[in-house]
Image (cartoon, rainbow, N blue to C red; front, side, top):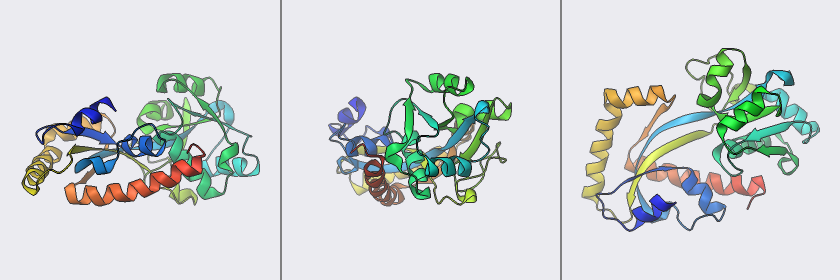
Length: 247
């Protein structure tokens, strides 16, 4: 928020990383800033969100989780961090709503950090957690936790054994994207400069190495595509925040 407020007052030689928090913070009433206050430059990458179970829960699939919650929304505890209204929480809300679960009655436990949430999951203090794939990938691969579903549109590299929500009959694809934006009212020439620059960035070997090290998937969109994408995302987040009961 501090960075984005700063960006709003700057000249076009200043840019900022953005994320879906720009959308959810506005819908939650946490910020007066929105996509209309800036110029979209690019969407660079995404990571995907997983639903992961503790081994003590004996859960075997995302669909099984949704079946249990549909019968009794308070039958399982769902861990998220660091607060309600973030992508991890809203991705689960979307999947649950799509399956016909009464989202208002779900028992969410909120942890201060991803590390605290992982500890709770490993100890069986929560049944499942909605969290970034990268945070639980290693524990899944070593059998300490069981990833039940991912929000991607296809299997994620390295954990191809984990089915997507779509493969389990739940129509959900939820990217946790990050991009770049500049101040409002940039000229076509300024936008064209950044378009060319960002295209060079995403083609570079250094960027590909950074992306793979962080388990980010290529999700590049130029300025024109980013503007359309953000308009679609804004509608989506408005509905998700309403569905979550947080508005």
